[in-house]
Amino acid sequence: MIEAVAIAGLPEVRPGDDLATLLAAAAGDLRPTDVLVVAHKVVSKAEGAVRALAAVEPSERAHDLARAHGKDPRHVQVVLDEAADLLRADAGRLICRTKHGFVCANAGVDGSNAGAPDTVVLLPADPDASARALRARLGCAVVISDSFGRPWRIGQAEVAIGCAGLAPLDDWRGRTDADGRLLGATHIAIADQAAAAADLARGGKDAREPAVRLRGLERHVLDHDGPGAAALLRAPEGDLFR
Amino acid sequence: MIEAVAIAGLPEVRPGDDLATLLAAAAGDLRPTDVLVVAHKVVSKAEGAVRALAAVEPSERAHDLARAHGKDPRHVQVVLDEAADLLRADAGRLICRTKHGFVCANAGVDGSNAGAPDTVVLLPADPDASARALRARLGCAVVISDSFGRPWRIGQAEVAIGCAGLAPLDDWRGRTDADGRLLGATHIAIADQAAAAADLARGGKDAREPAVRLRGLERHVLDHDGPGAAALLRAPEGDLFR
Image (cartoon, rainbow over all chains, first blue to last red; front, side, top):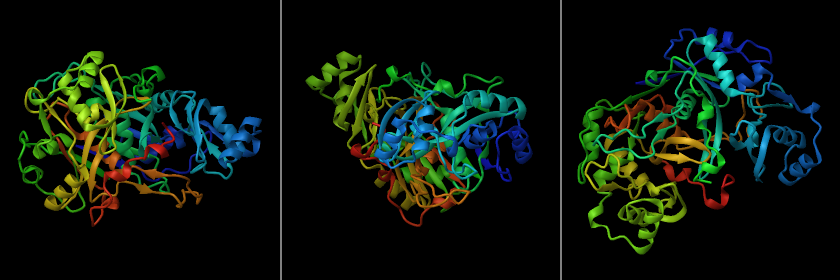
């Protein structure tokens, strides 16, 4: 059985806050086999990965893109700062590959739930390192999540952008099915599914419930940090779906 | 709180079996606000959506593709029969758009857990109709799931290919975040996240646990069938990520 419980009572997180202490106090009983899924925004805010738009000087390119897509040029500049590649721009969204290698809208730069006006929240600089630091303090597995759009499907789903203490993938290659037949290429994205499960337990985008405790994933919990969510990134040249 | 419990004791399902009766007997207490997530393979088998490879005559094109990609030409022929478009072929996988509009490897045609040798399982002909029929018999919401690969990310995640009685999307457009700021394009793919959460509760690909009961999704459960998983399909021309 899997149980997902949203952690209530976390205060608004601000740059410089000690997030591990806040999470530990709000979560109460955390066991070594629990997985705490934390929406990246509180991690980014605690780490200071936010930008005040008033301090952003948009480049010529940011102005051009902003004009073409009906966006704030300062927001566009922050997106360009966070992007390694701009893959496509249309309908007000800039689909980027981030410096980490994630492919998502606006390079993960988002103004909602920023906690302050005219402020945008970035992705953490190194989400796996953030997860490792939280795991060391909390003593349970940690997933850091964000909601990404998906090709071919409507709607966003939560995925893991950082993880520590949880095996991000369950590798069934070379193992057999219930009939004893060898399974082909079967890798299950456990950390992404954990992020998705956690999101269902949240009250919603207005609920201030960034952290969710998952219980029942003992099978995938490690006694070390493990490879992190970086193991979920497919190199562009190996990607059959592109 | 969300609770996901794998349903034990379902027998091997065969063409012509009354799946609703088997599921009801194995699941026991099902409430109207429960969501039963059912792996498509048992639905396909009960509906007879299977093909014995011995009865398949591969076309010239199937032979060519099979030679080029190291596959069984009869399996390739079934994939071509189920595909509306072949988008890409490489490394032994044929990335297809199915007749339903799903983009997935091998058009969803799979030999694992087929229950018989030299047999492949197809996707159900109309997974939303299958979900509606099960909902009518079981009295709870139903999601029919399959595991799909994803562009840019390693590993498969379970998604909804059919659903009834569950809102497939939670639409936050026009609503506000915790700061009262208007949210942009925010649609949450509830049915896909439910499929992913359910998969975490299963023992694994060898566990014969095709059905998982989710409790705690009252907020998204409908008093009618709703639009089904067809609402999750993005038309190719509206897809920014392609």
